[in-house]
Length: 416
Image (cartoon, rainbow, N blue to C red; front, side, top):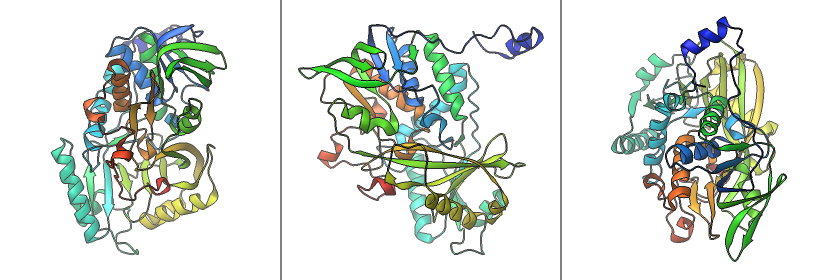
């Protein structure tokens, strides 16, 4: 079924009896050409592009829970490409361009809203760092605009400019950044992949890999063995646990990242705003809720819930940048499990096991990377070669000394 305004009108006039399920619930086959482990945004996008761009006819996505139950439905929905380093900026700009055409490509309303993102700076040194980042963005074909304090005040008069420990001196804006409805991304990719013949198998947990003589021939699951020529893992915060079943030890740690939503309010915040002297970022959803977050919890965990010290730290950042947020009531809190790599950048690469591939280590960048991650992983699975924008995302960069240390904090994933 193709969605359109005419279809909505027709169904409204006929009692909405013509809608069909967005995707099937098939039984797993005995064998596929390619299996993608993980039914989140990255896994579904990979399957979609495998079918659409690389014409793969035998693809399955295995999800241990339900579609949209993992990190793809547990984030703050921000998309952007305001990175500095050559290993990252081309990739995230590629992703942002895919976001811009996503709804037309999928025939699905993902609520892509390019309302812009503004990174505030509070010192001369931070301003100089943002000038450098903005120039790097421009050189890679992205957009960047440096704003002074008066320009920021015109756009965001509600911010605390002067009566604060860290006065706002300006900001770096990317007008093409913004937000997307996270659940709709999962649903849209699932629907698009299913319509091209991909089997999306929910409630199917991978419990092991069948590996012989260094070759992976399939996966053991709670629904039996499923054979495959190639297996790709895209399970975010569960990467360490899943890949350990194949004897692969990853250079990542898993930490929980909490997100918060307030009660619905009238339009206040024009786009995404980030605090330069603390880890706090905020936007406003189409339903009016303030959506915000901050640092990850500082301990390793696989739980989708956090603790109170981080809640306090995030609220302190919000009060410092915009004291009026103290009058808003929190409606709900949730947590996603972040796969934090040793340099804050991801990995899209083959493993030392023939037929087994890996996509993970996304840290905070997972949601915004969804389209490009899926495309590049599909390219790797289909051709055996890395995509031109993902050539730096190799496992051996740690051994070769080519880390992509975007935040400059070294091998401390709790600080990225």
